[in-house]
Image (cartoon, rainbow, N blue to C red):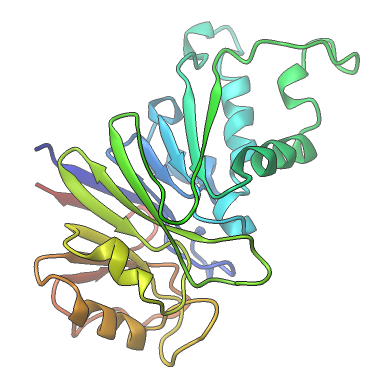
Length: 263
């Protein structure tokens, strides 16, 4: 199998606390969540947006998907300034909860009206964007195969009642199994996505306690760590505190532009 390389474009929570919002890229081609700082952070990490083939959105809170319009904008004008070779032509696959296409496209139009029809503005003449956005809608329990990935989705415990659904993902990529909680408080599904995983990227928003409906704390992480395979490496993100996991085996805190490589 090939190496699995994770680059964190941000490790902060919705309030950031001086960091970029949480999100990461696997092997320079799979983006997990698209926070508002996505394009900026990818540039800082020296990851070319043209390499991205798949974006997985865990849920529809602004700190996890408000970067999408800016990414579309960057693709739209990549061929500008006399450099048409930069224009994206490959499909971009966007995976997310039910309603992902309508939600993301509505946001894009709200952010930049007629984003894909800029030629002739304000006459709104349609323009070929040069690539196709292909949406894959997933419900809890679904499994799909796309772009060389095998993806399973599970319902996470995050803001139930105000969000249709928040998803965690289990992704097989280049011979590795990667689990990602997105945002989640404690729930049984944390083990569903993480059992036997090589790498587990987990929400660790709070330093202590047990929040019932939003996020995990380091107390939760300790219990989760004890229930996972000893060989699983955990990487903690979405942290709103300065309490890194000093006492947990194979458990690390993500940082902005932090990079982890697994052979």
